[in-house]
Amino acid sequence: MIELSIVIISSKKDYLFSCLTSLESTLRGIENEIILVDNASPDRVGDEAKKKFPQIKVIRREKNGGFGENNNMGMRIARGKYVLLLNDDTEIIDKKIFDEMILWMEEHPKVGVASCGLLNTDKKTLQGSGGYFPTLPRVLAWMTFIDDIPGVDRLIKPYHPLHGWSPFYKGEGYFKSVHKQDWVTGAFFLMRKEAMDEAGLFDEDFFLYVEEVELAYRFIKAGWEIWYLPKWKIVHYGQVTTGSEKAMIFELQNLQLFYKKHMSSWQLPILTFILKLGVVLRIVLYGLTNPSVAKIYIKAYAAI
Image 1 (cartoon, rainbow, N blue to C red):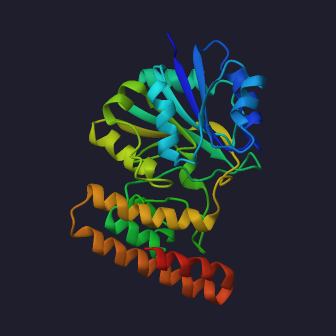
Image 2: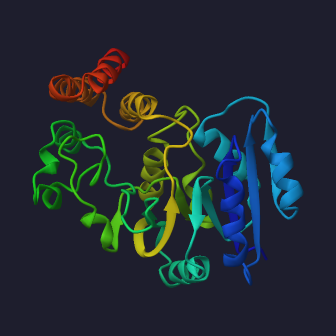
C-alpha cells in the first residue's frame, strides 16, 4: 500500500532537481509515489526529470494551468493514504519529516491537513504559512495594518499573521509555535486522503492564490482540523513562479471570488470597499517612500 503521494508542479528546472534530490533520502522506508506535473515548460522539464529520477510519474501539460488545476491532475491519480502538495522551489532538510509527520497524523485522526515550518533561504528565519479565514473584521485589520499592532493579532486571529506587504512588517514569532489554523500555504500541504476525498479537490476558478483558503474552508466545513507544526521544517525559496505585483492582484481578486462563492451576498460590496481602502492607504504610504511600489498598488486598485 502506498503511504505517501507527493504532487509537485514545475515549469522550469531552477529548483526542481534539488527538490527531488532532497526527497530521495527522506523517503527511504516509506512506500511512496512522486507525481510531477510539467506545467507546459518550454524545455519539457518533466522528460528531463524522468531521465534523472526514473521512479517519478510525469503528467505533461501543453498549456499553462493554474495552481489548483495542476494540483488536481496529480491529486486525482494519487493513491497514497496521505497526499502532499509540495512546491518545486523547496528543499527537504529534515530527514525524518515524513516518518514523523505521518506518525503525528496517525495519532491525531481528526486532522485533515498539516503543514510544517517554512524557512527562508538563510535556513534560520521563518516565513508565514497561512492563517485564519478572511472574515470582514480580519480583512479590515489586515488592509489597515491594525493587526500589526502588538497583541492585536492574538485577539483577532489574523488572516495573515505575518505578511511582507505591510510597511510595518513584524517578526516571525507567531510561526514558532504549534497551533491549529484555518488554512496553510500550498507550499507544503499534507492531506489525509480520506479527508481530501470528502472535502474535494481545488476549485479551478481560482487560478492562483486563495485556492488553499477555499479548499481549507471545505475541509473545516466537513469537520476536519488543520494544524501548523513547526517542529518539522523545509526551506522554501519563495515566489519563483510569480512576482509580487501579480501575487497581490490575484489575491485581492480571489478574495472577492471566495466571498461570491461562500459568503452572503451583502458581504461582497463591504469586502470590496475594505480592499480598496487598504490599497489607497498603501498608495499614500508608499507614494511618500517608494513611488515604484505605489504604482503597483495603483494597478491593484484598478483590478478590484
